[in-house]
Amino acid sequence: MARRSRARSDQGKADGSAALAEAPPARPPRWDEVEVGMAIPELRRRVTPRTLVEFAGATGDFFELHYDRDAAAQAGLPDVILHGYLKKAFLAEAVVNWAGSPQRLRSLSASYRGVDMPWRESAPREFVVRGTVSRVWEEGGEKLVEVSLEGCDQTGAVTTPGKAVVALG
Amino acid sequence: MIAPQPSVVTDADRALVGVDTEPGYHLIEAGMVRRFCEAVGLHDPIYLDAAAAHAAGYPERPIPAGFWCAIQVPGSELQRPRLGGFGTRNMNAGTEFDYLKPAYVGQTLACTARVADIRERAGRTGPMVITVLEYTWRDEAGHAVTRARLTGVRL
Image (cartoon, rainbow over all chains, first blue to last red):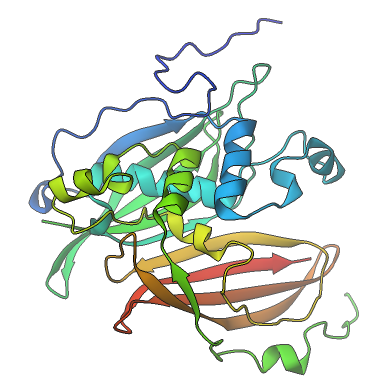
């Protein structure tokens, strides 16, 4: 078996829990330059079992499926699975990186339709967030943009669709 | 056809729909936010360092958009609606958050929760209960800051 670890330019922490570095946007988008169909920069995250334990500690979600392989096996899963709220945090980050400020975010929804598993040396997986502008309009004195989001597993299958609305200047 | 099964949702459960719990109070503490940021790999200093937040034009460190799940930790004062104990598995099917007003590290927010909806369906393996819980956080002046709707599926 060819075991290829994905050699990305990983500037994250050596423990692998950290993010892969992304270039920040040159400047926030201007509302009048945004068009339906425009893509936002992709966000890629390598989630390790350690990430899941840190997230459990930070949020108090100690559901065993997120860190205990035996519990996952009993539920018929080949490995532990990512927390829904962890995936949602990545969706939020992708949109906020693009919009330039967390305070431009007006709403964010996510559906947890499929499971995602952490990165393993034997199974190098990443969680990827893609987004496309799906609506541009004005309402209540705000210039709004809706971004349709897709949280995907390493095969590109969408496990976590979502929608965000941001107010741009 | 599957024969109709007795409802697993009780009248007491249905009586909770639309009724707010008493508020629980949450101090948005800097260390909680930092732990969350470390876990999700959020390195933007506006969330971590008050001076960086000020330099970027914020009056204080803003709360990351994904942070709200972290202030319902066990032991928090949040009061949850006391729904019946049906099902052995409770899955998070989806979440919707509305960000109504900026919130910052150091604020104490009051959170109320209510059952917004409760429905029962026949699933493949037995009854399935779909609940929508709604949480609202308010600032010290009583203004709604964030509202969340959580859809749970109990099997």
